[in-house]
Length: 270
Image (cartoon, rainbow, N blue to C red; front, top):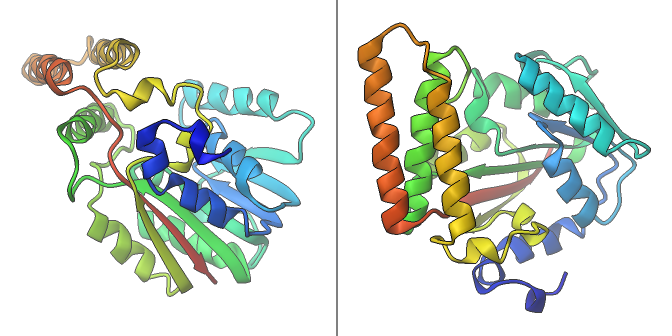
């Protein structure tokens, strides 16, 4: 995809630079941790120079997450992709089993970040590539981006209340310190206002305007859906406080719009 085909915001971000760098990497056998619906696998298949096979793993603690994985299996049927239910704190693979390991937008969903990344490091062959993409909450971000973080952290509190692991958005320094502990070589760090996924998103032109109606209505629906999840929560005081916070976030979205928080994309060698 040429930069000319992109909206201004995506084109001026580092998303294209990162995609170009990925285009120099031969993925070999790839492991995607916290794969969800396989979105990052799809991105890698579109950007890497080449690859042999891909394995997506996720913990799948709920019926909804298991259905998400089933949907991913159907989506990639006939392609060299396998999806496995697995706790990433205890990967059922031998040492140096993969040429590339990656995790995208999932760091904040891990109960033990260091343990998962340590397992990813263990199964990565010497000389292999480690890829990480994660949003962060600080730095020079617009009001629309701060609103995204505000909504994310509100949803994280509700998830945590219901027993779902969901941490607050990490700071840039926290992500960097976590990755630094892995002692990777040839570390490359890219900051971007847009993720690589945005290059291929059908709605990339809609998102150019943080106040576009489609984004607004999707955000309001997401907030309403999240509120419904706590309708039966027994503590009325907590339930009502979270509902009120949700209404205030709606007002903030109406005022500033919504844009994804900035991302770090990190590439390292084992």
